[in-house]
Length: 215
Image (cartoon, rainbow, N blue to C red; front, side, top):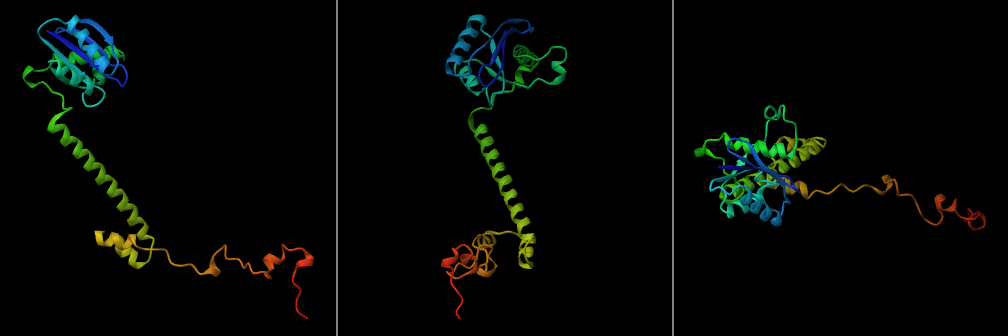
């Protein structure tokens, strides 16, 4: 039985073919696209011609989703490899080939009756996406409500009561319809008299054009 381990990346995943004992047969990287998937499968069938093969991919729900689908379509069993832990890396270093080989070793030690199958497709994946979207909406809504309560606490007694109460749709609609109070013209910083005979304008007129006071 040959085990194929894949360390996935955005551009070029690393693939390792090894025996069940863990001894490496070959390793190579391919592009992470449909052409690379076809090349990967062709290379795997050439170097692992035995009838029993299994593909252990790290990241089947992210960068390895495309390769996992292509392998499943080609009839190769696919399992989801766990991300290597620090204790597994100790004494080995860090490289793409090492991580792909660790994906092989993680598959070798698994119980054949309890293999972790990928969750990239199907109802389970659709439910996961739905729950993630719902959690994101809840987090965003909670943040907006907290910011609104902070603004209401800085207002008058009515606003502070609203901040402590439950913000229903009716309350939110009434707050959204609010408009700032009209500011008297005399208190506006830009409300400077601009009549023809104002001191502000007369100061900018030539002396011969300035209006004279009535005698």
